Structure formats: C-alpha cells, structure tokens
Length: 184
Image: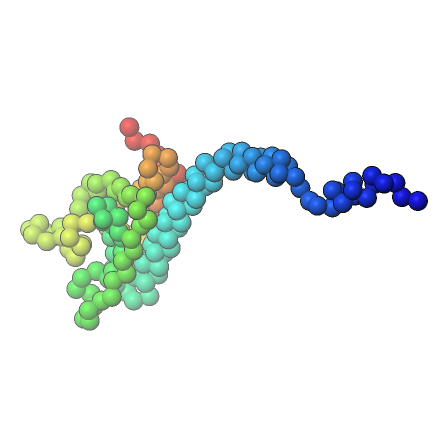
C-alpha cells in the first residue's frame, strides 16, 4: 500500500538542485575565489622572479664551465636598460665569429647592477679590454675564477614587492641567489 503523497515527494527529490541552492553555491565559490585570487597573483609574480634568477645563475655556471673547458675568458653581460643579458667569449680569443646567447627578462622584471669600483681598461685607458659596449659584466678567467673587476652583484627586481640578488658566495668560488639587501 502506497501513500498518495509519497510518490510526488520522491519525484521532487530526484529532480536535482533547486535554483536557490545553485545560487548559494555560486555565491560561496565567488567569495572563495575573491579571497584566493590576490594571493595567487603574488605567487605567480614571485615565480617569475625566482625563475629568472635561477636562469641567470645557471648561465653563470655554464659560463664558468665553458671558460674552464675552452681555456678562454667568458663574459656574462647585463643590459639593465633593455632587461637583457647574455654570455659570450671575450673578444679576440676566438678566430671564428662567436655565437652569443642573449636572454630577455619578463617585462615585469628589471635589473640593477651597482657600479663597479674600477672598470678594467688598457694601460692608456683607450679600450675596455673586450667588455661589451660599456655594459656591466662578470668575467670568468680560463681558470674558472671570476675577475676582480667583475660586478659585485646583480639585482633582479619585480616592482616594489620583491628583489633577489645574484652575488658571489663568501668563499668567492661561485655565485648564489639570495634576498636583495635594502640600500636606502
């Protein structure tokens, strides 16, 4: 024996969600998304900064290895105005035209290179000893050590939010990534 009202109640239950329930779920999702979105955007911006720093550090390690393997000075140059950097064998050390690796940073990033205390120049100071176009550079000698006239550090900034610097390690045998120190 079935009750007359029970079949309509059971049919109503099988139809799914009501419009009010769907609206409540959508509002909850909107609230959660509005709270998570700012944190996610800063996460992705921070990833661009650390990714660029790791790419530059890898290029430094490659340049050092190449200087040792080929027995020639290798330069990592930085152009802060164009947000580019690259690796090249120092002019005059190869007979063929050398391929130069050039990298461009993401548009939200900018480079800062504190001025070197003394840029290497010839005895008559009429040339810059193969350094590219007055650009700051890190020069790896054929023994794998970097030249003392190389820039002290390269700072990569992303807006006002964060900055990393690539600087020599304490023992001056290689480079490392560390949070940029404030210079105000």
